[in-house]
Image (cartoon, rainbow over all chains, first blue to last red; front, side, top):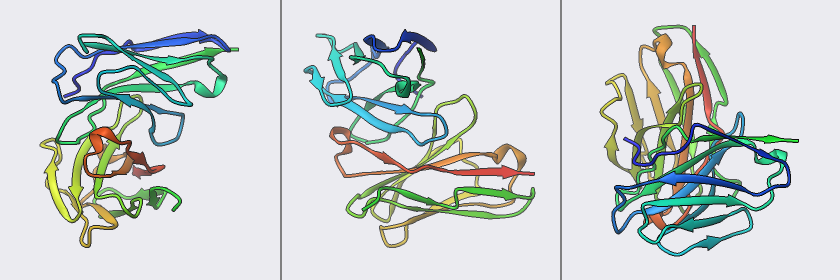
Length: 109
Length: 115
């Protein structure tokens, strides 16, 4: 079963920042927090991951709470191409990737 | 390397027929995963491999489903005696061992329609 909780959907205006929350209160010390997104009619694609510290890459930033029980994916300037379902996933030593329902992000022009 | 490729992209079959899908992972990736996704749902884990060894098979997976990765490279997923409820997108992904600290790469999927 998925070990994360995300809102079903969110809306944002184009060219504005988007903060996608994820709760993972049962996270263990060795779980990595991963984010993937799935554009319409495509397979999921990796966005970002982290363990304890905040992370930045060309796509997004990941802010991890100090107690690691929640995290936030930040898209700094949303575009229409960012409309997708975003999945927050915990990966443990078993390496399985277990998806939940994700957050469907709508971008308004 | 062009990423994870899946074949075919679409398959229409009659109920009761057997179907087989192929996944070619990224060449150096040891881990290979299979998922099933129905409309409006997140991908559902089916099984995964480390090289040629099948590590786990979802308890939700019936005995009609079998997966192999005979030489630790490509993998096949076979569904025997297909049912209409098997209609879904079947996704394959690959990653390196220790993948909890690396990314997984997904294919475009095989869309199965059982009529």
